Length: 246
Image 1 (tube, rainbow, N blue to C red):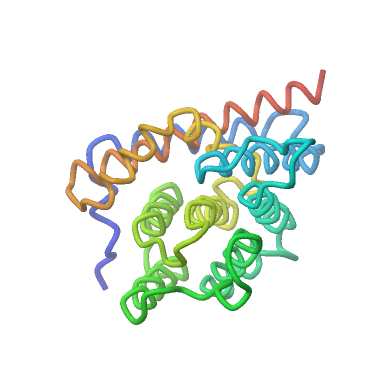
Image 2 (image 1 turned 30 degrees about the horizontal axis):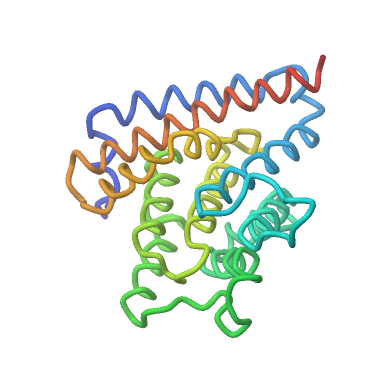
C-alpha cells in the first residue's frame, strides 16, 4: 500500500530540518547529566512545555499568587504530568489506543473550561470522528515516515480540526510530544519545542494556517517550522541539563 504521508518527506527543506532536529535531540540525551539524571531534567522540561503551551492557548506563563488558578495553565500542567509518567501513563495508552489518549488529553486540559459531559468528546459529528480515526490509523502503523514528520502532521491536523472546541492547542502540542516520545525520537521527553513555538507565536500561527491550506508550500513551511521547534527544544534541553549539572 502507498504511504499517504511519504510525499511530505520530499518537500523542500523537510528532511534536512528533521535530521538536524534528530541529531540535536540525540546530543541532548547523551549529555552526561541526562544519562542518569534524566528524570529530573524531564520533569523540568515538562513544566516548561506546559507553561509555553498555556501561553499559546491564551493562558499565563505561571500562576498569579493573588488570583485564582488559571484554567488553561492548570490544564496544561495536568497534561504535562500525565505524559511525564511514561509507559505507566499516557505514552503507553497512546501506543495502544491513540483515540483514547486524545480523549484523555482533552479531559485533563479542559477540566476547568467546559462541562464534564463535554470532556473528551469530539464535537461536530461524523466528519470530525472520521478525521480522528484517520489520524489514529496513521500513528498505529499507517505510515512509515520519520517521527518528526508524523508529529508535525498530527499537531497541524489537530490545530486545523479543533475537534473539541476547547483546549485544542494544548491537546495538539501534547500529541506532538507523545509521538516524539513513543517513537524514540525524544524517548525521555527532554526537548521543549513549545518554548520556541511560544516565542515565535506569530510564525507558529502563520505556519499552522499554511498547513491547513494543504498547499505544498504551506505544508513544507509547517513541517520545517515544526522541526525547527524540535531543534530549538533540544537546545533548551541542553540548557536544563547544564544548569542542573553545575
